[in-house]
Structures are given as C-alpha cells and as structure tokens.
Length: 336
Length: 294
Image (cartoon, rainbow over all chains, first blue to last red; front, side, top):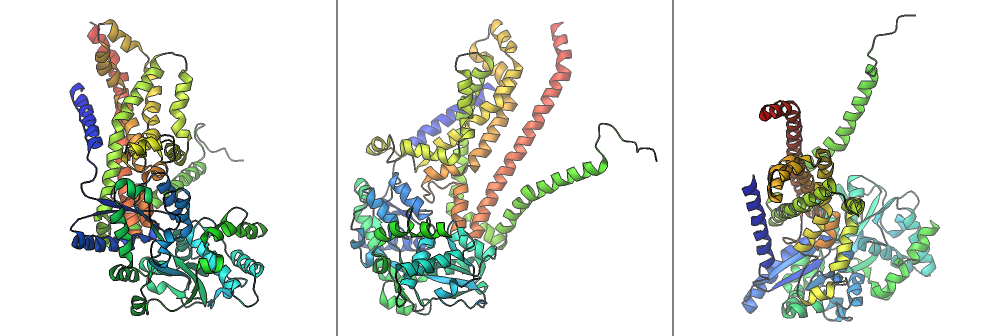
C-alpha cells in the first residue's frame, strides 16, 4: 500500500511542475472576446483571416475565442482577461472598457461605419400565419397581446427592443418624449415576463409557447430557425426599427503588452474586406458593403431604420437616461 | 362491532405505507429520473450521428479533458489537507479547534459565485495582487491556475468532513499502541491510521470529485470562457445552449451526467465495501484477537 501511493504523489507533483513550466505561445496568438451568439460568425471568419494573414505576411496566427453574455465579458476583460480585441453587440459594453482605460475613447472612429462591421435590426417573430395580425409596433401595445422580450435593463436585446419601440413612437407626428414613454409603458405592460437573456426569451416563446410575439434580432431569427425549424414561426418587419450596431475595438493595454497590435489591427480591419463582409451576410448579419447588401437582398428585406446616435444622441446618453437606476425604465416599471 | 383488524404495532397501516412509498417514488421519478431521461432524450433528438458529431467537436473534447484534469489535479491536495485537518481535529485538543471546524465548513456555506468573485478581487487586474501579477506576467484568473484554486476551495471540506466523525469514533488507542510498540510517526500513519480510514477517505474523495467536475458558479467567474483553453464541461453546456446549439449542449450535458453516474456507482461500491468491512470487523475480529493473543 505504501509504495504506489507515494509514487502517485511524486508523479502528481512532477506533473504540476511540468504544467507550470510549460512555455507560453510558440506563434503569435490573438484572443477575441465576444458576445454569445457570435460564435458561428467568428468560427467562419477566423480561418478566412488566418489564410489571408498567411498569404500576405507568411506568418501563421492562432486565434482564440471567448463567448458569453456581453456585459459579463467586458467585466472579465476589465478584470484581466487578456483580450486583444473585443467584438460586442452594444457600444455601451465597450464604453465600459473606455472608462477602465483599456480602450481608447474614440474607438468608434478607428474603423469605418462607427467601428461596426455589420448590423442587424429588431424584428417581430410571431406564431405561424400571424394569427393576431401583428404588423407594426402599435399592434404590440394593443390590449390582449402578449409580448416576449428579454429584460430591458440588463440585456442587450432587451435594451435594443426598448429603444426600438421608443424611437418608433418618437418619430410619429406630433410625438414627444412623454408620448414615447407612454407608448413603451403600454408595451411593457403587455410583457408577461422579462426573460434573462435572448436565449431565454426564445425558449419562453418557442418551447413554452408563451406570448404572441417575440422581439428579437433579425440575425437571431435564423438561429431560432436552425433549432426549431423554419416553418414554426413567421418573421414580421415593422415599418420602422432600430439599426443595431456591433462595435469592435482593440484593447490597447493588452496589444501593447503582448506586442500584437499589428495582428489585432489587421484582424479587425479584415472584417470590412469583401470576404469578411460576405461572411457576415452568410451568417445573416447585414453587411456594410452596399454591393453585397444588394447581392443578398432576398435575405435582408428593406426596412427603415434609425440609429441610437440619431435618435438618442449615442449610447453614453441613452444608457443613463433609460437604463440606469431611476431612468425611464425604472419610472415606467415602478408605475406599472 | 367487528373485531379490530390485526396489525403489528410497529407498522403503519398498509394504505399509509403504500401512499408514502408512492409519493417517495413519484418524487424520485419526477426530480431525478425524468430530468436525466430528458437530457439523454434531447441529446439524441437529432439521432446518434448528430450526437456523436457534437461530442467529436474539438472544443467539447477539450472541455471534457479539462474538467477531468482539474478534478484529478485537486484530488491529492484534497487528500493531504483533508487528512491532516481531520487528524488534527479528531485526535488532538487545541485552542481554536472550533474555529478551524467553522473554517472548514465555510466553502459549504458560501455561494460559489461569491467564491469566484472573491478570487477575482484578489487576483484580478483590479484586485489586490492584480498589478503585481500582471507586471510579472503571471496569469491566475482567466487561466488554469485560477480555475484550480476555486475548485480546491469549493471541494476541500468534503474529505475532512467525511473523516472527522470516522476518526473521532475510532479514537486514538490504536495509534497510541503503535507508538508505544516503537513505530515511527510515518509507520503508524501508513500501517494504522490509513488502513482504518481508507474507505472513508475514498468516499470523501469521490464526493469531492463529483463536486469538482460539476462546479459551475465559481469556475464561471474566473474562467474567461476561452474555447479550447479554459472552458470546462459545465460552462460548455451553458454556452452551447445560449448559442442555439441544443444538441451540442445536451450531448455535453449527457457526458457530464455519465461522469456523475460513474461517480455514483463508485460511491455505492465504496459504501458497500465499507459496510462489509465493519461487519467483518465486528464479527471476526474479537475471535481473531483472542486467537492471536494465545
């Protein structure tokens, strides 16, 4: 009994020492910290970029991905997760890293199109055949209609849904902020629950069959189809919706420390290349390239959109006004 | 009036026994068997080939490997610390003993997420040692060391908790006898203490192991979710589910469930062995002891 146990201890101690002494990276490597549903996009994009990098520089590069809820992800980066680049679904998440001094303040100007290589928009997912004839935002505030959406205060999808409805109401003739708040208040009254994330909202709507309409990203509709089948629901495009941007940024501190600035910059730049844009379209994200947008027109019906910058003066204003404690969401919700 | 029906005073009426057993079984079915079946049902919803395909993903395989590695890695530490703590508590009297017991129970009482956050506050970039670690290029959180540390913290009470009552019941006579017969400390440990506690120790290790493999909250906070690097199986399940890959998520969950089942079987075997040994001791030992004295 004595010998084998001692040997096992020794072996484990040796293994510990070996693991600790393992060398760092043989080749340059980038870590891309991203939100949760971007996996398919970057799974396809990474080999595209690796090939491009190999042909232009002759170097090979290792690309690592981290995906989880976006707010959790930026928090991890602030706490020391060594991301060379962050690719998020909301500017407010990157603003958090600006506050922490990890990303430059004018990151949106470092790349074209507000540093967002592709976009999407908020659409309605309704039961097959659209039995309640829900065509536009006013149909969603009618009594007796149940709307499923993720929590507007803590989730990206929820915030975009909220701002989409607010912006629609604000753009109606003679409308003002007060009218918009009332409109959104009616919408929230029709929500039987607030899901804890996009995925939960989908599960509530598709699996538990709750509600008449799910407000979600256009790109997410395709993911839902992948899992639940295309014939299970209809997608309705409202007359006006919000343009959702997916900003990317270099994490200055990390690329300087690791000496990967050149690679990281190229990695993000290449998102705007023809190949990168085509990959976006194939993953149901609207490419910025007008030519490709035309090519994939069947997949992306024309829809009038507004941006957060146009209607709300940017996320740094919209976020505190609506979603911080005491913002319009709290006002509506407390009076509900 | 008819004569009262005959029944044993120690037994409940038949209908009550059946109802209670029925409730118990129904409870077991709905809360244990059904979810387990659901996991396998969902995992196999796309057929065997989709199931195997999902498991063959390099990221899933890596997650399985990482989960097993962490569980195996923390095991020797758990054994050493657990045995030492249990020994000190069960066989000696010293000041601060109850404080030590409380400290051992602490990981049971604290929510795993809080455990993760605490280590983030200590080793994270904005934490106490963060700047120093970063300057010396030592990675603790969002890397393997951090995940091992939180798993250790979460699992280390199991061995000690299992051994303390056992060692207390056994007392210290046998060890004292060994010492008085001239055994060295190590000799006594390997030949007297360890054989006495081996099943209890194994039982504690198995429980700690099950916990280490299934741990989600604390590991989630310090992992950083890097695919193929710091993603354990429970984290992998969540992330696959969130990105609409139900088959992948449930396939991974089924692997986790299988690991748990293996652990359960091991646990049952150990329990069975433990009971057999105690019974043998009770019946055989007195006779043998007498014989050896003669």
